[in-house]
Image (cartoon, rainbow, N blue to C red; front, top):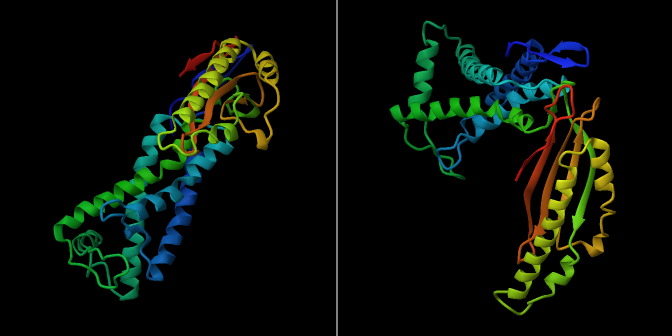
Length: 321
């Protein structure tokens, strides 16, 4: 399952690139089976997890159940160092839809068993129709249910189905943003962290304009601190843009140690390096960490230096701001 393997050259050896397969898929099926058991147990206790809605429209219960169901795909791909493909994601969505119907069927079967009824008395699709049209909402804290939704219940059942299917993808979405070495077919691991720090400290800036509503001096000081570290960060990025890993490490190590907690800066740019466990492919993210005028923490990405796509020669960096 997934896209066909593409050959990847490593020195004189050509190996097939990993693609999501049966084992990753079975990991997702395994967590789904556990979730089915959990949902059935909750239903038996009188709690309908799939029927939770926020503001009468957002199917938060179905989304959360879907997230739990989809954990297996993410765990399997991370542990096995497999990069999920777009085609595999479509399989996940299709499986999520099938899993939703499976949850409905198990609930249907438990009702037949509870009332000692036969499928001839109530067909599965008749059950789905009945549960959709008889849906109702109650206010928070109220024990009485509202009026049945009738045909409008189909809309909410559709939202529940869509929320569950999308929820199964949420854990895997986090993996799409993780840097991956296609040469070694491994996810990168944290390597080092360094930073450039403003001369002005947070304590010094917060002392300014204490009695002023608009705080012009504090605004100017924060802007100057941010401009200072961004300028210095740009110089560091220019230095490491096309440098090999050893030079990147040396350049970041040369930035010096971080200030003490007592002298925390008003602004800083942090460079977080991730490295392939086997080769020198690496990924650097520069993040601005500063404060708003009211003292609340503010962050933002400055740039990314990505050197993970090369297969035989050290690849050039690509910086996105």
